[in-house]
Length: 460
Image (cartoon, rainbow, N blue to C red; front, side):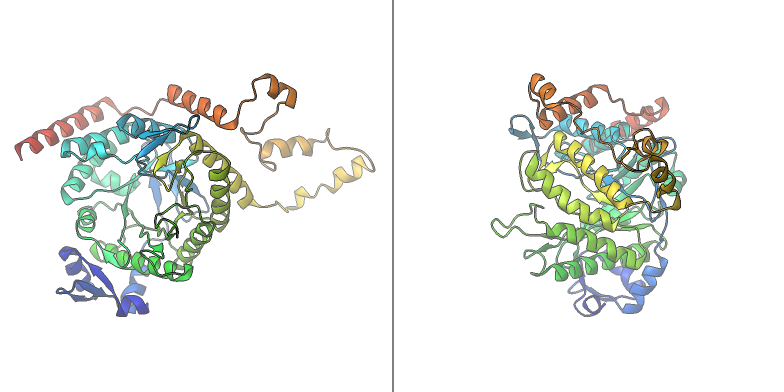
């Protein structure tokens, strides 16, 4: 409260400054600094919805936030694809983006979309931008979280959403898409990106507010001060969102991180990322807001033991704090490298962490005194119904990754490594998964929108 009331935040959007001034903020248009009184922040937190659902195109699919559930959100914006078997990298392109989109559509643990490959192919024209959205909604049927960079892009995005989901009112009702807002650290709400979001006013599109202060770089040099900065930037943007359209759903999603002291870059390897992800979750719960937590990546460049133990340690701490959404499987090298094998490993880490979060059931039916008495001294429980039930009911997590082979059978099969097995698994998914098709009339409407976008781009 002190930082926001005294230091304030620089707001580069004139439109946003006008909205905040009308809502009671102290605005200096010369310096662009906006200061927030405590009463404004507290009123904003009261107005922000605490419960709502994230919808999708898939029939019956819905994710209720603040409802005791957790789902994965795919990590995003890789510029390279890594070959898990050779360790070689190559520049990621449209086909890689499409494969990754179909891959995460097939995995039920991943409920929310990010573009796993940086969509540079969508940046050349508005026509390409519409093509990107057209293929996104065609190949992913759960909830989409994405961003636009200009008000013009937002207008075209809203047209696509209306065509796919049945118009503005249906989009308002089902929330099939959330908008990722990323204040720039330290303490800046950027202009074009903020204006792009403000074009969504009236559509009730949830805002996921994700500043990314990096300790020692764009944030001060302690974990708690980095959390403080992330919280200030999130609350400032939250005030703008509610001032622009009171009652807009908001996801508390700051992503504080740590600068690698050797290179100055983000790696995500540091074990403290797990603490940061848990802290973000605790802050959101304090405000009673739904939360999207990030718990680090891996600075390593190939899938395997190192990347996996880094991910497992960080995720376990964050998941035990129990956010609604957890970012993000499948990336290596500081989120610059896409790996399908690591994606599948990360989903397995999530499954195991999810089981840990359930703890031990201490209900009266689980003590099994009757079984103890029936078997008596020196017997075994293999034939008991309770043993069978435990193996089938989730008391014990049984993984697809577990090897049931003897050493001799594994040796005779050529000693396949986990990465080799996952490589074949990924190939099989990509060869067999068929995303939910769009209705023919929707496809025709999207084709018309794309053609019009390309024609208008040429005229300009």
